[in-house]
Image 1 (cartoon, rainbow, N blue to C red):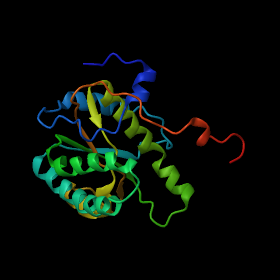
Image 2 (cartoon, rainbow, N blue to C red):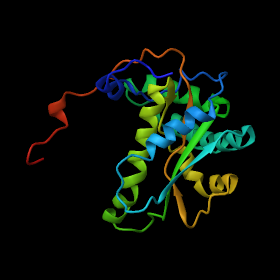
Image 3 (cartoon, helix red, strand yellow):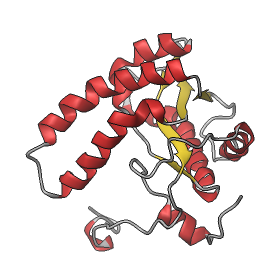
Length: 206
């Protein structure tokens, strides 16, 4: 089912969903394939598709990835516990996801061929320049079908172990995120609070 959203509504309501993921409803493979097919059409920085998606539905593999994720999320939440008040809401959502990540029916791991360590910034930016637009297209396509997603990177602190779990050739392929995917509890998401536009847009000079 495609939600009745305008393009602007889709772009402004594709939220980072952590708490409102339906952990009991399976996500159909054909729906995921529709989203991934649309992701393939994203603008690419390379003449060849040098990026991949690893779709993880196996409960054991999801549990192993969730454990790596929690090993980083726990200390992060402790460090931020006394941070600004506005972090409290996000922190609660991150904590909720940490407790339930293994139950999220699908983990999507965007990957790109090559590694960015010790490379010039221009090279790294070019490497990320295809997989990130593709991943965002996947997330938009998911939202339009009633699925929630959130871009997470905690597990990358243990990327080599994650590669071993998933059979990813670590030396040749770099993971860039772990995207939990599930149907959402309700679809009535609203635009998020943001700073005034003139506080982050710079015309001609900083």
